[in-house]
Amino acid sequence: MAQNIYDDPDFFAGYSRLPRQVLGHDGAPEWPTLRAMLPDLAGRRVLDLGCGFGWFARWARAEGAASVLGIDLSENMIARARRDTSDPAVRYAIADLELLDLPPGGFDLAYSSLALHYVADFARLAGVVHRALTPGSAFVFSIEHPIFMAAPGARWQADGDGRRIWPVRRYAVEGERRSDWLAPDVLKHHRTLATTLNGLIGAGFVIRRVAEFAPTAAQITAEAALEEELDRPMMLMVAAWR
Image (cartoon, rainbow, N blue to C red; front, side):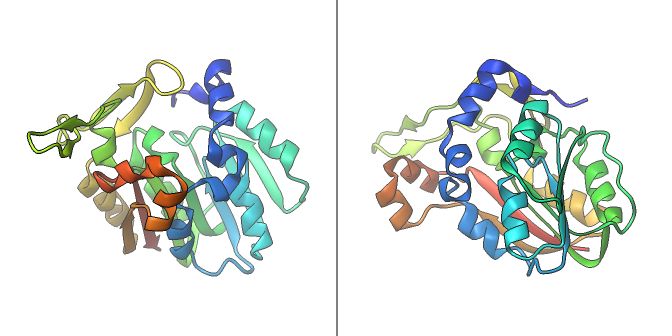
């Protein structure tokens, strides 16, 4: 079973104050890139893995999706999503992505935002998602970039010329990585970029597009702290087709 850190009261309180949870997609700087990787949603049955507060589920319906099923392990997340959603075509369910089972061909799009790095067995989940999608459907997701995860809690250091260096630790060693983020001992699962992409290919997906988040000049002007994302990618985004 995955670690359910989002039902820790202190963690959830801090998480709820993050800009992307207060503002939704407007507070997520990677959203324009991720949105561009999505197919037309009109008439699609959408699966949202790690749905959180339901921001994407509601957006998908506004874009014409026929229905959305949002899945999350956190009772707090699901309670908030249900509170903020008044649409009978959007359903939410509590489920562990590690143990998830889905009906074959039940969906026309699978989506996930910053949730799959909490899953230990990504290859298994990719197989479950592949079987749950109809032919020609897309699986679009973002995860914490493995380079970023390989430097948990790291602060940049200056080299002799004053340039910033991010200390990446044992990138090639996959497995559990624990860090202090909003709460101590948050568990994530580190995989190399190759392992993630090969897990999709092994499940039967065809990789269509890969993006590594880097802020635009306009985004840096609006939020100066984003400039450090030019030094190393924080998020990896992938679009794969069944």
